[in-house]
Image (cartoon, rainbow, N blue to C red; front, top):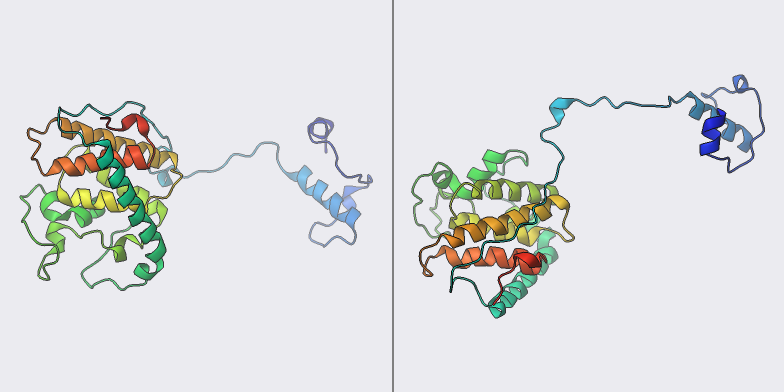
Length: 262
């Protein structure tokens, strides 16, 4: 090793100097001294600077996380929930998360129906259609139906987040599907199918949050407050669901600056 490297990396073990040409790296060392000399020889053969060859086609997007610190829009008078309501929702949500974690392996082992074909994790448009249904995805008028109706066409109205489905998603997939739906919500109005899936994915999201997930859920809360601010009536069926999204992000995931106050 040259002297400048030795100054930066002082020797920890004494190694006798010897002719490096005597060593054959293809042969196993015969004693500890030979092993240490071979390590030194291998290190000396490494270049000082190594440049990784990266295929730009494999980089789907820049690995940059933008975390916005802006808060939620204030709710119109009478539209925000009480703190007691929020505490109750957080308690219920916590119990649901515990139940999912406890029974995850059981539900993951359950066979899916033949008509349930889960998209690949990187298929953004496929997941939007799967969760929201073709009617909503194509901006058609949704057909009101009972989710328990055996004749329901889930391809048209969206597959509910059954435990047998969400239990199959690892944390990477949970974050990706959450991102797909929040991106959709950023440009669209709130629909019941979206609310069900957002709740289920949040229930599967592990703490502590990764930076990407932190940014996503804050985006969800801000968008929910924006839609809420434009509601015309407290009787709007979307109000409770929007309040719930903001509540869970702020109170359960501890984004306290986004919380509704009394």
